[in-house]
Amino acid sequence: MADGILLERAGLPAVSICTDAFRVPAEAMAAAYGFPGFEFVTVPHPIASLGMEEIRAHAAGVLPGVLRILGVEQ
Image (cartoon, rainbow, N blue to C red; front, top):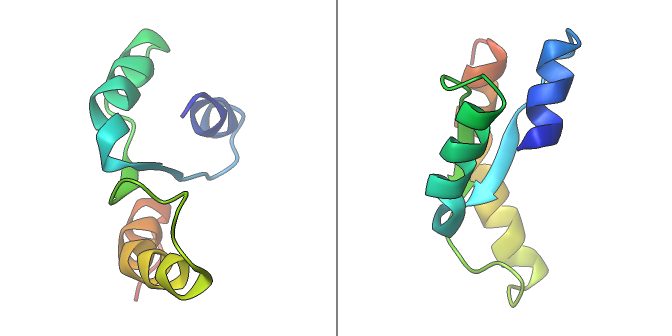
């Protein structure tokens, strides 16, 4: 989360991705960094035990949100 905020502040488009179990801490971190409206996407928790196909499915699932945050038309 912090990296995404810092990149955005530096003028580089970024999208942070975290698991849904960390949504509340991610929102708190964004507020602590002075960026309470920072948008990010989440994937279901946990991901550490997933196989490559499951990871790909999660990535495909969040892609529309990533593109929306970046302002890319689909």
